Image (cartoon, rainbow, N blue to C red; front, side, top):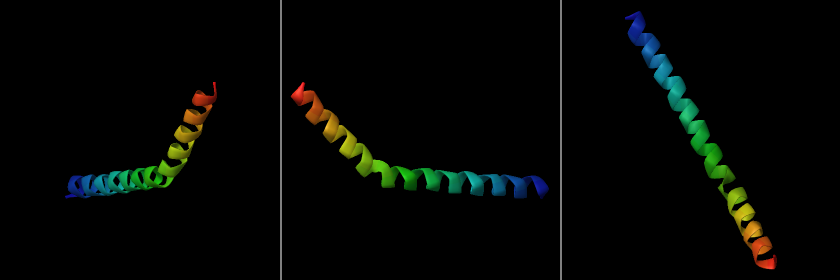
Length: 46
């Protein structure tokens, strides 16, 4: 039983870590779009 409980806890931790990463990526997508847009404008100017 102890091994199963540990495996369940590890899976829960990995799941929450994955959720955190996905949420951060969703929040930072606008920053990446802004960066790409500004880089494109700079490329055109050069």
